[in-house]
Image 1: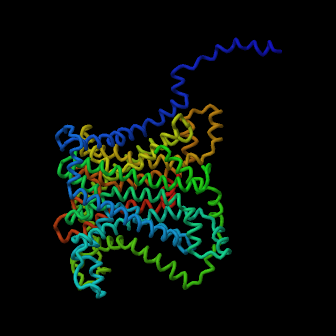
Image 2 (image 1 turned 90 degrees about the vertical axis):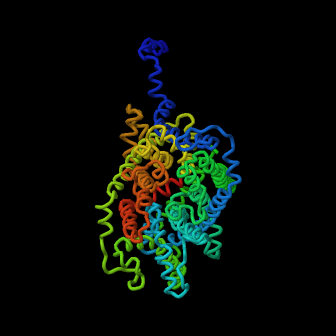
Length: 319
Length: 311
């Protein structure tokens, strides 16, 4: 018996060795490599490379149409003494904190409202999302018109209600201009926060609330001890995105105020556009946009550690 | 930093841990019967009404301004500004026949469709490789792609402008078609990874045993099953392209090459007090294609938006 089993070894040479070409065609790692080529190509050439190039540009005195020389951190030193740059940093931080906090508050509130039993629920949800669908610039133009200095509908309404007796110069006054752009940003961001949090809320089992009600919990206690803990992970992700995109916002400001009046609404992104593209100082503009990177890293870290803490509370190995 | 993907697993665990089935299958009215009608009116309907009105008012105002005659637009004393009885399509007529507007719409459409198709192809391949081929380092690459999602265009546009200039793509739609995928690929890869994970592994194993190549499996088995995911990714990418502003503003120069958002901001804004009608008509006409698309695919939209966050 053993002989019979062993004899067919002669037939084996018919199987040819796997050539290098077969390896390339069938090996898991090589296949994976081929499948990744298009995506990685785009991301390396148009994302990773420009990211590095941007930092390099910030260390040179490149201007539009002129190759720059390496000048070390001179651009940053120059920015350090530049009052307008610091104003833009303060504006950006103010804009990000205020807008994100209010977006979170209203977004969560709206999500809780939409999670109730409502007639026309699907339609309401669809309507709420519309500000997110319409291109930001186009809705910013609508706000520009709503906040017009002479023909603002808000001024008109307030005047006819007898609250004010002169037109408010919404986008011409520094404080008002800030309030207006923050309002427009909140208006644009609330739907995203609300709908994603709503998706998280819908996964919370109603029986938890029923049990809590039987135990005599108040509405606030239910929110604090059931809804909020279960939502924490999704809140962390949503707020990271929200903070990130608010911090680097450009189009809303550009369409509404272009940084004015007297630079009071200049964000770092708009200032870098103005310096780099309009004034042609590519190096300086790149330094301003590179200065955003530490802030962005900090935002990502905060949300990441927020999630880690969550994980620790739940105990290990829940992935 | 490369540990970021663990966050998604954490999330998924929380979100899909038996709770969703309970929540979805429970069609009872919940506990809302415990509240009286007047109380619900004050705590629920009223705040909801206020928020929805504020969210939708700018569109109403946009539409109203677009159809108001110029005289009524600026005279707010003789006419009630909140309504008009003599709608006019003059502004739309001017837009469509006396400006480059159709051309800008076409540019936007062309760039959006081109960039979306490129990104979807690249993302399908990448997502499939990360989820199902699981080559060495797949998780690391997945994490890097997620990080790429967090790199905003506002810190890339200056160096990208020099790159675009070097490659001779300045002022050409191709510059946008090639740069938009950097925004779209990370997002759609994560979305599709989530969809591919839900497709049973056994189907692929059967096909492998029957001698199908990986490529055949992807085309004939995985993609047909992932069609809802593909639609979500497609419309969401399309919307992002349509919305993109800073690259289009930086890389395009001649009036006839511009996309709608850039063109409206730059070409329509002049000192004319009568510009508001055509400006709002332009904004409305520029949003309409997206709103129509959205109306047909609301569910896909929501799943795209929440899917990418959940994963």
